[in-house]
Image (cartoon, rainbow, N blue to C red):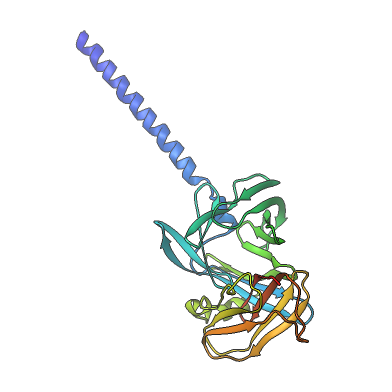
Length: 306
């Protein structure tokens, strides 16, 4: 009789353990089946491509290509290399966090798990900035119903207050971008996980290019910065092609064209003396220098102190 009771207790314990294990497996499978919002709004897979049409004012239209081209490991984390006017390094986690690695530091750039509207402040790693998030339901670029997220990056610094706008669509990624005061970019074609949408001819022309070469364009920070009398601007070019380098005020007015030529591939150094095209000394303040080629457009800030 006692033996039967022991057997019954053992069976009950086994059944309880099996039931608990089954429940744990169900919870794990449910968590794994939940979609990753970061992967949905900025899909990182090698070969994913976004072709953007941009305008920087009258007679200044251009096309720019963003490509997920490679992976690298930094501080024991795997990052995807995305060509955004030079290589940048991103990764995502399973909770909707989207991170960027820059200057030996990682920052949570966007949090796709947040509800809208939402405001986040970032002070670590990069210079302090605030991110505002807005969400709305749309018919996406692919023709499917989905959500659209708009991120406003507000770089409020002691010497300059600047905003950048980035619009992401569910299942597509970047569809609109305003990187600086007078430049606007809109998606014209995408290739996501092997599927192509939009102008397929634009994607075909991108596929014929070498990703490593596309990532070799780079505009460096001027030195010294801030500066008083003159500063050096350097850039890397992967092949000979027309290049223009221009200086703009914070309000977006062009004051100087310091280079317009077809240089050889490699690194090039330019010097700006703080004067406009008429040779007049410009006042102290924030200025932008912009490098433009057929496939590359990037700007950086510098500070002139008289």
